Length: 257
Image (tube, rainbow, N blue to C red; front, side, top):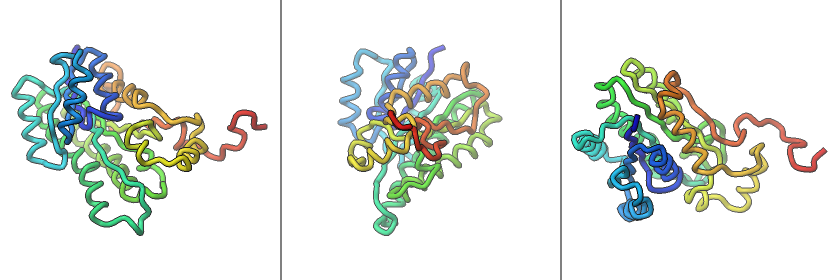
C-alpha cells in the first residue's frame, strides 16, 4: 500500500537519500527544508517523480509553522503515514569555545525541532491508529566524541526523547524509533571532517570506510514499513560499520598479523 512520508531536511544529505528511497518505493515524499533554493533544486532534479514529490519550506524550530504545515498537508489529502526527522545542524568545536548560544541553537534544531514535527504528525496519526516516526540521531549521542559537546548532547537527547514518545504513543499505534549513523558521506560531513579526522574515523570503524546516505535510507525504509517492522518501537539502530561495538582493533587492518 502506498504511503506518504514527511522528510525534514529532505532535499539534501541523508534526507535526500530517504526522499529518493521513498519515491523509488512508489510512495509519496514530502520534503521540507528551511532553504527555498535547496527545495527548488530538489524539485528540479527529481521532477520525474511528478506529483509524488511535494516540496515545502519549513523552519522546524518554528512550532506554529510546523503545526500549520502538517495541518495543511492533511487538509490537502496528504495524510501522513510516516515521518523521518533528518534536519539537523552540527559544529565541531571544543567545549571551552562552545558558546551557550551555539549550544541552544543546536539543541533547538536537532531536538526541539524534531519533537515539534513528531508531535504535530502524531496528533493526526493517533486518529488513524497508525504511524511510524524515525528520528535520525548519531553515534555521537551514544559515545563521547571530542568537539561534539553540543551536537552529542542533542543526539543523546533525541535517543531518550524517542523512547519516551514510543512509550506514550504505542497505544495509538504509532511507532517511534531512531537510527544512529556513524560517519556518513554527506555535505555536512564533507564540510566538517578534515583529512586527520577522516583517518581517525577509518581507524575506529571496523569496516574501514564511511557509510553512504543510501545505507541510512535503507534502514529508515525498514522502520517506516509496518509489514517489516510492525513490532519494533523505541529502538535505536546504529548504522555505523561496527563503530559503537568495537573494542581494540589490533590485527584488524589488511596485512596485519
